[in-house]
Each structure stands twice: as structure tokens, then as C-alpha cells.
Amino acid sequence: MAAKGEMLYAWTTDTAIAAKAECGGAVTALLKYALENKMVDAVLAIKKGQDVYDAVPTYITDPKELKDTAGSLHCGTILLSKVITKYLKGAKNKKIAITVKGCDLMGIYELAKRKEINLDNLLLIGVNCGGTVAPVKARKMIRDVFKVDPDTVHKEEIDKGQFIIEYEGGHKGIKIDELEDNGHGRRTNCRRCLYKVPRQADLACGNWGVIGEKAGKATFVEICSDKGADLINKAAKSVAIGTCPAEPKGIEMRGKVESAMLKLGEKWRKRDFTALKNNLWSIIGNETSRCIKCYSCIENCPVCSSAAVKANGKSSLMVDNGVLPPNPMFHMRRFAHISDSCINCGQCEELCAMDIPLALFSHAIRSEVDVAFEPKLGASAYKN
Ligand code: FAD
Ligand code: SF4
Ligand code: SF4
Ligand code: SF4
Image (cartoon, rainbow, N blue to C red; front, side):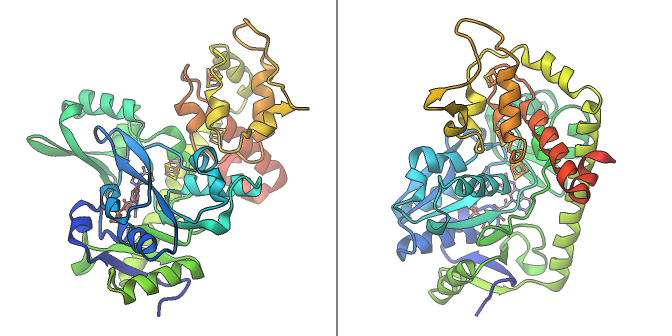
């Protein structure tokens, strides 16, 4: 029997899932098992829409539909936490299994702290995350740098430090470092992200560390909770998945890649935050002068709850009708109230109508607050 803390290789025994899965298909097989066996009432996952740049959140109650969600979409920048509060009543009356990246998970925890999500009703299947590329920028990068028509791409992946595309007539990979040095590649918040293996989920699944004959055919699973162990054991017993212990060498390799990714994240934090260090407030003032008050930054932020922007039941956004740009207090107030809880998910920046680098600002302010209260925690992020 597998237990919390163990690491193993797992793979689906369902050929339809295996054909579409990113690695071993264990994630989809486990979601299917949980739904079929009524461990949950529904699954929330991501599936491909029109093309590889179109990641669609999908609510599933029929296990047969789960195979459509297999595979990883690295140009899928959706955050699932607010989907749960906006459309699924905070999972307060339904048990839901969800595939989560680190930022999805952090958003869920923040909303659970605010009592907007019932964590007990969630089964959290985590996927490791090296980062995502914004869809519009991905298209531009593929056209300008890869010299490929983005509409002909049918698969993309990030592997061994490269962004790789498969398209009609071939495949091509370019090093992420090279792309990012030239202004392409992952979203800037993803570069600064230090949550690569989502260990606060019930399971943390990925491809790092799968070696030997199972390379490319199995999913690396770290069991992070008793709930996760229970799911793995039941699914293995019913032969929905196959499992074997992870190779010690594979565990070591996974640890090394994770450490290298964390160092890279620290490097980006230092680079991004140092550039702001002496002029943060004047840069914020200049950039936010383009604001058109679309309020997308509030609407999509997992820690910016509607309750927080209202006082005494009235809207208190500190803006005047018909005036653009808004009073700078609109932004200052927002930055102030999220300064202790911004999770660097990038949603505010990505969905800002005026391309204002909002996540950079809120993440820098959050890091500065961390430094003030936890000098050791924040030192490496901001002070060096
Ligand atoms: P499958 O059975 O194919 O299931 C994949 C699951 O991921 C599905 O439930 C699907 O809905 C969900 N999904 C797809 N795209 C997204 C998305 N954008 N956001 C949230 N959920 C999504 N593993 C590593 O070890 N190292 C990495 O650097 C790494 N980076 C990743 C980056 C991204 C953006 C994603 C989505 C995954 C990443 N993974 C990484 C995890 C890896 O790609 C596989 O998801 C994991 O190994 C599980 O494989 P599987 O065959 O069992 O998954
Ligand atoms: Fe992945 Fe972190 Fe970017 Fe979220 S913020 S998509 S977890 S790299
Ligand atoms: Fe995410 Fe932006 Fe909100 Fe921070 S402020 S949690 S980056 S949406
Ligand atoms: Fe202003 Fe951008 Fe926020 Fe819209 S998303 S209100 S334009 S800062």
C-alpha cells in the first residue's frame, strides 16, 4: 500500500487516455476513477478548445468525457480558483476533483482562507509547472522566431529547457533561455514563480524524474496527503492505473531539476525587482496612467475579493465617473489590500486591457512586505 510521502511511477491502463496523455496518463485515469467510483461528484479540468492556444476550463460529470482533457497546454494561462467561486458555488455543496498548477493551488488556498471555497470538498491533483506562455505572445513567437505559421501547430511542449512545437511538416525546439533573453518565452510572473512542485495538493504529478524503460510512458507521482494515497491505492487495486516505485536515480534527478528551476526563479526575481528598486512608485504612476478602468484586474484576482473593494455595502473604488485615468488611489488601495497575499499568478497583468505590468508591481510589493516581516524568507527574493 502506498502512503503519504512516497514517490512512484504511475500510468493509465486505458488506451484512449494513453493516446492523448502528456506522459503516463495517470492524472486523467485517477480523475476518471474518482468520478466513476463516486469519490467526487464532478471534475474540473482543462481541455483544448479551437487550437493549442485555447485552454478551456471544463466541468465534467460523465467519466467518458475525461479522455478529452488529457494532455498539457503550456499556452493555457487560466487560473481555476475563481472559476470555483464564480461558477461552482465554492464547492460548498459538491465534491470536485481538480487538476491544479501551483498558482491554481495557491489561489484555492487564499479563497479557502476567506471562506469562499470549501477545501474539504476538493480532491486536488497537482501538476508540476515550469511555466506557461501567453497565447497571443506564443503565436507571435512561433511566427517571428520559429518562422512557422502558428495555425499549423498541433502540439507544443516544454521539455529539457526547450519550447518545442510540432506542426504540419515537422517539429522544432528552441532553448527557453534564448527565447527569454530576446523578450519571448514564458510569462514574466512564471519566470519568477518558485512553486514548481505543488506539494500542498493531494498528489503532485509530473514528468521530471521518469527514467529507464518507463521514460515517456509513466507519470511521476509524489503522494502528498492521506487522501492522495487512498486514491492511488484504490485506483491501483481496481487496475485503473499501474504503478511501480520511482527509480532512486530518477528521484535524485527530479530534485536537481527542481532546484535548478528555483534558482532560475530567484534570478528572475532579482532581475525584475532590482530594476524597480529605487523608482517603484514613479514607475507605477507612469504605467497606471494608461488605465481605462475596465476593472479586469479586480475581477480576475483570486485574492481581490468583491467584499474587499466595497465598504458599508457601497462600491469604494475611489474613482470618479467619466474621469480617466483614475485617481492613483484606485491602484494604491488595490496594491495595499493585496500586499500580504498576492500569489504572483499573473492574471491581473495578462488580462489588463492596457498591458500594464500589474503582477510585477503587486509581486514586488508582496516580496517587500515579506522582507519586512520575515527577513530570511524575503532576503533572497528582493534584497540581494
Ligand atoms: P494527463 O493525463 O495528460 O492529464 C493532464 C492534466 O493536465 C489534465 O487534467 C488537463 O486538464 C490538465 N491541464 C492541461 N493543461 C493545463 C493547464 N494549462 N493548467 C492546468 N491544468 C492543465 N511536469 C514536470 O515534471 N515539469 C514541468 O516543468 C512541467 N510543466 C508543466 C507546465 C504546464 C503548463 C502543465 C499544464 C503541466 C506541466 N507539467 C510539468 C506536468 C506534465 O506536463 C503532466 O501534466 C504531468 O506529468 C501529468 O501527466 P499525465 O500524462 O498523467 O497527465
Ligand atoms: Fe506555473 Fe507558477 Fe506560472 Fe502558475 S505562476 S503557470 S504555477 S509557473
Ligand atoms: Fe494574481 Fe495579480 Fe492578484 Fe497578484 S495581484 S494574486 S498576480 S491577479
Ligand atoms: Fe486599469 Fe488594467 Fe485594471 Fe483595467 S485591468 S482597471 S486597465 S489597471
